[in-house]
Image 1 (cartoon, rainbow, N blue to C red):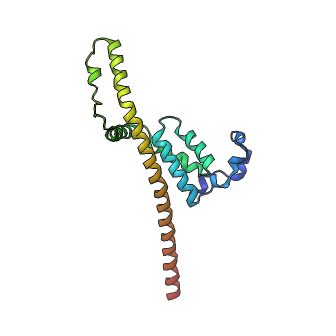
Image 2: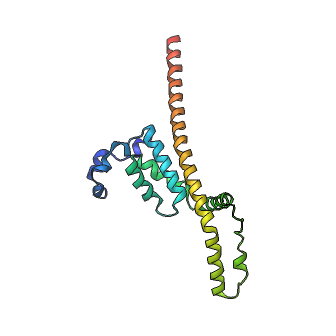
Image 3: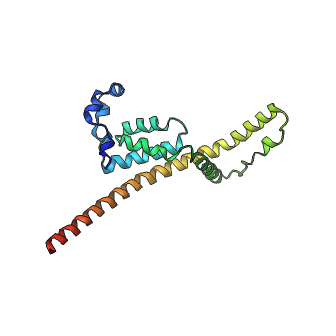
Length: 181
């Protein structure tokens, strides 16, 4: 199904952009669509997509390279976070981190609203507000990333298994229909 989008082995060998990676880039598990490499790629992509706010695709690609996961699946799965989902993801991550840490849910901006007339005080208040949400946000992002990786791995495994069972069921029904006719 996805084979037509993947590069050929010859095009990978000829690419000057990938030559610095050496023979490692020619590992078949990076490019073949099979259950294990796709599941690992989905886990890596979900992890880096939910954890790292910048350079998600290169980070996931490098990790897929070292863990021998499907490179394209890892890159595409990082798109779980995008400009449309950043707000809800970070809000939920902060709330989750604050709940786990037992921190008060004080992201209301009250420190910023205390001194609207002085720019320096406003910046100091903003800095206090940002540093106050930093630890719960980082913890929440880590928890979301690990959970997303686990769900990505097992979700890909389950999806693959259901596809195989569906295909076997169709073939069995086709065989019984042919033998009955």
